[in-house]
Image (cartoon, rainbow, N blue to C red; front, side, top):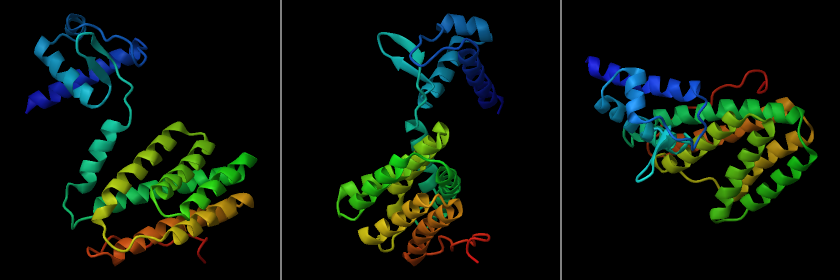
Length: 241
């Protein structure tokens, strides 16, 4: 039982070295020998830790060239999150519900902040996305994602933007397990238009309420699906009175 814990400790120590030495993405990693001396473990232990870090995107192994600091992009996290979302079986969508709830919490707060302070051009950009949503086809989904990404980008929190984009992508991949009728382009556009209208008024409460109603529709669709039980729309304090 001690081996996994030891492996995690070595992996963490290598990450600490990357941070302490301020190695940027793309920088060469210390050699195996150097890591062995710094951490005080065997070559095999270092190699196991490097493989684990490679799976996380923290290091990148370029065959014939060496090992480099990775960009730690969201690709590996997407794989992990998608597995956790779907691993409990097609009839259990509890984790998909949780994913939706977390995304809603993030986007509600970001949209509330953007409502109070945003570029005049943002409304025009969002309106263009809504127009595209009214058309059937792949571009409607692209416009939907772009709409949310524009708001997250406007909020100025890079990590929150990356997380919401990740949640959006994972949900779209896994949502086929929900069943139920898909929302029509007209209905989708209408819900997004309500968000735009609130931003035009710079009404933070109305913007938050519009985001909640947008997510409520997804919950209702899931509840109507063959698996049901996805969860009912939760009460929204004050705004729904």
